[in-house]
Amino acid sequence: MGLTLISPAFAEDAQIPEKYTRLGRNLMPPLKWSGAPAEVKSFALVIEDPDAPSGTFRHCGVFNIPPNWSELPESADTAPGGGPRFSRNDFGNARYDGPQPPKGHGIHHYHFRLAALDVPKLTVPDAAGIEIMWKEARKHALSEASLTGTFEVQ
Image (cartoon, rainbow, N blue to C red; front, side, top):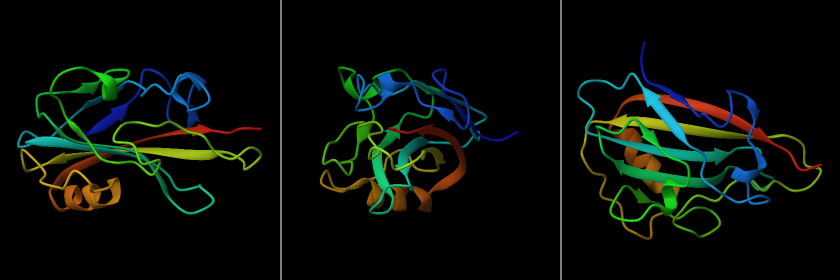
């Protein structure tokens, strides 16, 4: 069947609830996956908006997710203790920042992309942004899955 990615908070191509946006509580939505290849050694995740006026806008990048994990709970970016690493997003924060499209700009599509990797850790500098992290992750991808949510400010 292959790697699949879902969220209990919204369905494929459905609107992301406001509490997961910068207009709401800006919580990272919960994500769950299954069907990872047996040889997976870690996971990486990106959340991108290709509909942004200035081009693709990166909202979140997570890497070094342990291979035995099959989900990221709500607000995974604020969980205490050691866990996966977060890349600096296009807001300049090393965490999740949710949708905040310009008012009246139409529907934006937020692509959540998960990669199962053949390495236990990506070695990218702390200052590296999501784009650099994802390029490195794709070099090691065994399998990928995606989920798309939408959001619009009228």
